[in-house]
Image (tube, rainbow, N blue to C red; front, side, top):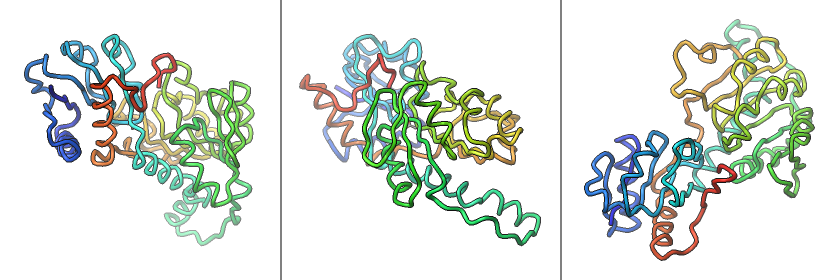
Length: 310
Ligand code: GLV
């Protein structure tokens, strides 16, 4: 039996090496060279892979996402019926996302956009001293990524709030849930961070009505998916000054078209979906563990709940 890998050609080699380092007995096939379709028992795939294609493999028993997000795997036609999908929950992924959130919180907190503009104009002017205790951070999505991102922010003294789908107690963090909860948290978020999974319930959640609830001069940080943000609404809020700046790592579509206004907007800082990149050697052990569990019909790790959409 064989494992099918499907992602960019350069990354595929790293995945193959990482999986073989954990289990040298694995037979690995690199898409599109799948060989005999009846050999494939597991598919480890990234966003580019067409889910309809996975219906070709009659013995497929496991699909693994090469990332934390699985929205791309669940959109129609979705995975072949009855085949479980696992996502990655990986320390390196959560660490990188935590770093990227911290980078951008500090960028906005320490008035970096203003100081960069002053440097450009050769202006020597101290701005008001920022105080972490007075800069409230609201994190939408308080699962693996959100919880981890909150840690260093709390250590620095930022008051951290978290919004979750279901009520949840997190020591040291004020938590909110439901639509009213989101509105209440937004009203107090000087920096709003989106780390939600993209589902039918969260698509377009960062809309004009949510942005309008932010305190004037708030900032937005989106490390989740481009589909969470209504771009026209964010651009209008940035243009009016109600939102003072946005750090965006994710877009719809990706790559972002060259004529999109975000590229040159003075209040937007962008990274090309690079906040958190899977490191195959870190992720491989859980993929092999899940393959062994699937073979033995044991419960899988990090199984995607199709009804929740993540
Ligand atoms: C990256 O976007 C991921 O889903 O891991």
